[in-house]
Length: 80
Figure 1 (spheres, rainbow, N blue to C red):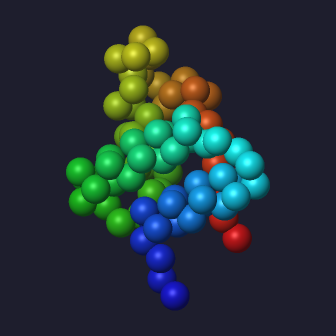
Figure 2: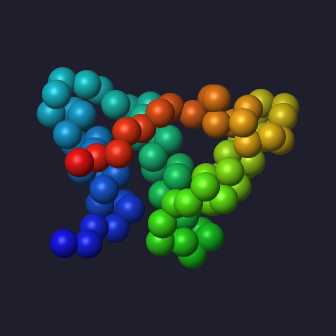
């Protein structure tokens, strides 16, 4: 079974909600990643894509370095 990034994200959010978590903010972050991937024509998120996605928030935090954007992101563990 080969799931898309969107399907993996949806499953992850559903599993967390099944554990009683709201996951509204995390869902917004994941949707932002998914929309970025879609807009860029990407099917997977690698380090370069993640760094580029973080840079899309540079205007919000006043810095353009990926490390600063990465620190503001919510950590999402890899689903099993």
